[in-house]
Image 1 (spheres, helix red, strand yellow):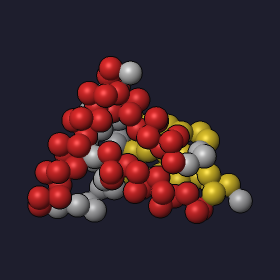
Image 2 (cartoon, one colour):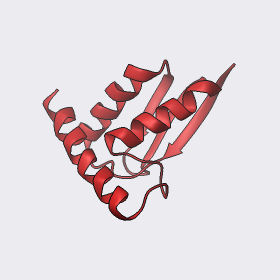
Image 3 (cartoon, helix red, strand yellow):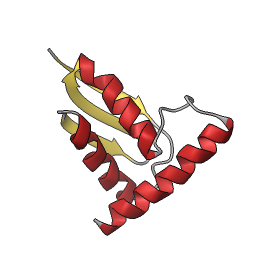
Image 4 (cartoon, helix red, strand yellow):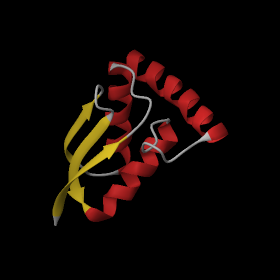
Length: 92
């Protein structure tokens, strides 16, 4: 059964970030209605319940962790990853 999900994330800075997120999510899960809201730092999508955690894990691996889920050194690492993802998204 298809459900709608919203994940509040950190580190979305620009259109490059948005492009990287779309490509990254589409590489691991079959989602529909994928929307990235840079201002609200929100990723919304529809899909099966089983893919929600896949999407959250992929976002974190790209440097866009769920809000409040990382701190300290791990937060610094995810922030650095987001800059790399952003740059890749701007190029492609």
